Image 1 (cartoon, rainbow, N blue to C red):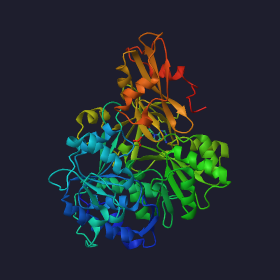
Image 2: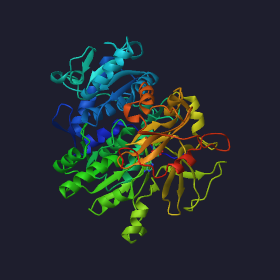
Image 3: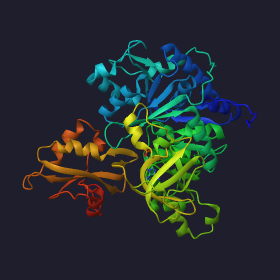
Image 4: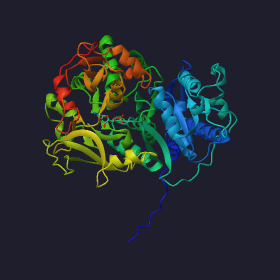
Length: 554
Ligand code: AMP
């Protein structure tokens, strides 16, 4: 029997409308590229998003167009999230840490018509436009190519050879209301690229429905961070899976957002937390290392800080203990770009709260239980589902309303990503215990995660293989105290007496990858270990270099 309830499409703009009407006390505080601190309420952000939508429409943006952002966490970036998706266009967040080659690829692959850029990143676009004028196709008008909007006011517009439009001028004089279209809820709203194991980055194309549902899942899952009156500092960038959904979840619950801009070192984050009385903050382990060092220097943690959500890489137990013993609750979360991104949260279940501290820390260093809305299973190599007994280890698969159904315009990657039953393969190797706690133990995908950003080992290997003195090579992840992991290049030289120089290989790599993606060190071996099928056995190599200390990690 059919139910008899109204059905209204889930729309992202409804989140901001709700916050504007029902959370008048909450605000967005932003450290700006211009050097000052800016404050606005959700009501002001809603009005300015309407002005921005009018401004973008005047530029020629219409439904389905891709509008890119290349920006730090800040109120203008927040307004872009809502205005672009609200008018039916797609907000493509570009990671400024990508190499020029990768960035050019995703701008072209996404088909970005407009790129909105923070002052800090204008030089990146200038360099790209200079090196690749044809591919960048920059133009003053929508019909002729891509337009660039600098996210500042007229007084701060940079001198540039490029034709640049000014964000604040787009808004000037525009109406503060907009007739937001009623879109089907599966309309594309956001686009975020993630590293492929091989080849080019792959795009996750979020819908209004997946984004709103994910924000609701988060709101009920992490109430200690997300509640009315909370003041949340997202260190995780808005170019990294929508800042893990915080720009959507915070306005729903009435939490304020404290946006750090580009100052992400321990001292700057500490100062902002203190002056804005931040209650919760979310980010990757590398950031908390900086905050921890600062807290040690000052002899205290920021005074209002109540919870840290740590994810993106495994949170080390020492880090969890450091903050927990100073009164800050640590929630260790796991997720992926393909999952909007949050999949699990590490809050202890109620019956675990009486356990001794030591035991609690062991549990907290695991990745936690699935959030409502995400299902998980582990499978062996034949695709057989394994028991969730805490013993069996297999590849982790997920499904749910906030998980991708395929990659944007990438048939090949889409075909490989799912099992026969339609579950998405995460490439993580894990166990799940009877309490539902996930324990990520390894990574099947050939990627290295450094400071929350990916490095493709296969890409580095392909480049190094072109060196005439390299017979074969492999790149493996070595644990690093600051960056979590860094790449080590292992080479079997053509002639052991005349091995290649790492500097020469770096030079070759720099043509394709960013500087921070270069291997930290090179080791020569007689031959690389092989698996039964003749592939390089990275497992054996990782064991062989277990305990290896990289040059700057001693
Ligand atoms: P991304 O798509 O960049 O967010 O990266 C997702 C991947 O990061 C996952 O598939 C894991 O390999 C890794 N990851 C994320 N969170 C954690 C965590 N808490 N512990 C271990 N690995 C993690």
